[in-house]
Length: 558
Figure 1: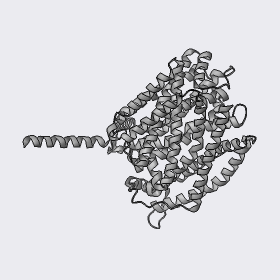
Figure 2: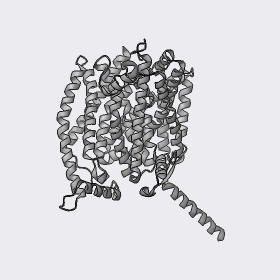
Figure 3: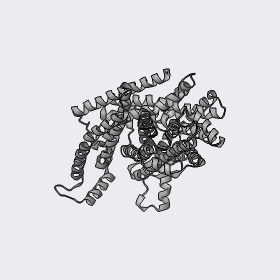
Figure 4: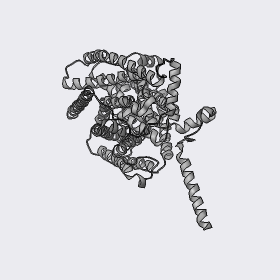
């Protein structure tokens, strides 16, 4: 009996220890208790807590500078010099706004992006969103293995060795059943990306053209279809649909709650700034390395960039670019494939967490592994146009992004889900402008493909006028509606309160808020105008993708 009692006590202690471990946020650089009293923490403890919480924002942002991103930024610098730096600079706040919304959705609701779309918009729209994501993610994964192939080819290693080995490594780092171990591996890859800045300084850039490129919107050779396509490609590689699904689920997987949302916002904002500055560094490298040489405006693919850098600056720069390409590809592949697996688990109700071992979440890990295997196999097929795939996948991401942002914006204004955590009026206005701008850019590609003789600049001017005509009144209406809702939710019955008092009441409501079970909250009522608008958007995106495929086919066949 005594022996049985001892065993029972040991089991109870073990169970209590596991429960305490589950109440911690464990990251690559430490852990923090979910219930720590933040206001009473010292500065050192706050920094320690930030180190533990940081990860989802840094990984999603820096992972966005993947193999396709490196190739796109290198092409932008090689073909347009420093004249398109302003595009990347303007995308910093865009990236911050979009990713802050998904981080907030994840922390407050504890529910993945795919499941929220399914529950709030229905299975039909969820299926469309997830199919879009899977197709785009698969093609993006293919570009990662193209990067791996090119990077190792520079060092004389065959793709038939480098690609399968890389695929196996990517699978093994994910199935350990340890979130923090996976995150540590990605932190190592993030550290290696700092080679971008070494490359930039090695070409001895001049400050004046860089500053001009950052603040003066222009394009080398004038505004033409090529410049517009390059801008859409930059947008598509800087902010892509997979990032929305990944960060929301990764925040949940890491067990980040609203109490720690400020820390996750800081993680996100730092990541957004660093990744775009790194992108600018790549563009500066190729802009100055190839200026006044035969390589300027003569982009082939990322392997060609590495060889050209070796010829113009020195072999060590070509080596660094190839190492960056391999590193960026591994980092991007790890995040993109996980994004699909998270979405699959969300939509079909499967266990999906890096805390789970393979035996506990087979569907999750098999989805992860199968897409890696298929994408790796695709690029080993002879005569596949690897350079064209890399470039046009980024443009495809730019075309499909408006749909993903629209769903994100609607979810972040769903008071049944977020309560007092819904978007502020100014955030809705900025997000609406972003959506209109993204739709405009993708429309230019569609119209130019169908009507190749139409001037791209004229198209952009007319679309800008239409967007402002529609967007400004909509923004004003939304702001008035938000102020009315804020007053209603935070004021005492029939009393007017000051702005500071409303903020205080809002903070209190946020502390008390907990998202109810999705089965218990009211389904959103959609107007006929809303339904028609969504179907029009979906129809347009299908046409835009078809137009892009036609353009790619024309280029491939000559």
